[in-house]
Length: 185
Image (cartoon, rainbow, N blue to C red):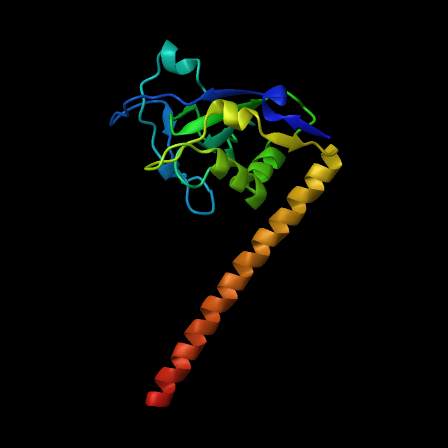
């Protein structure tokens, strides 16, 4: 059974703030994530904490969905760095339904089919962006928690397989280059 995302989560925009050199709050931006959607742990806090910012603090299990650009990726905030807020580059999704794992929802948003739907819903030419309501209208299948965990395990194995293939290709390339160098000598 599919549910609209807005029926199982609250959806809000990230915060627009001006980063400072010194701060105590992490201001998460798209540049803090690599192409594999992994967080760069060397990020430093760059916002001052105040009441306006505190009400936007992220909690473990919140999702950040890139609202602007061509890749509307989703990442789960795991609370490794805190306190943290999402920049206005992101839409923050706070799951209300305990029948959905945050990692499963992030996986679902990141899959090619959903990314196509989000790209089709994006507006603007220079920097396409999705709205909170477009994200909220997204239909989410909710299998059992056991199936969600199984899907995530399969996905993780696929990611590991791809990393191994890249490593093997890199080693093979070095081997071939060395053979060519040896043949020249």
